Amino acid sequence: MDKIRINDLSVRTIIGTEDYERESEQEIIVNVTLFTDVSEAGGTDELQNTVDYSKVKNEIYEVAAGSEFKLIEALAEEIARVALTEDGVVRTKVSVQKPSALRFTRSAEVEIIREI
Image 1: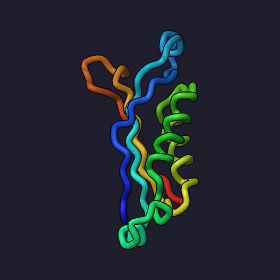
Image 2: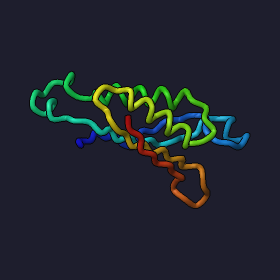
Image 3: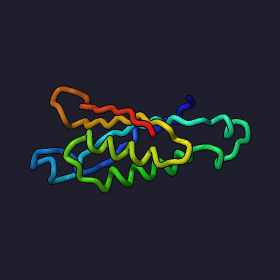
């Protein structure tokens, strides 16, 4: 199965379980892999024969930026749901990193794989 990746999408959103985390937006980093067949697009060089990753990125950004989830797990599920609504996407891998989650670490991360 072919893959289209959206790497290191930075989004500011309300996320977290603690009161102080819900007072202002925090940065999260989203990575999404879309499993699809790109052979027709490769042969025709036409956008309509593949997944428009710019459109998918915009949809994911809007969902994440407008959300107020407590858990990055819940946000990852919602991003996976959005990704799987795209024509031709049969499976997705989503990771959400929260850089401010743990002291002395680069980030905390959740990664999920979902399919139709």
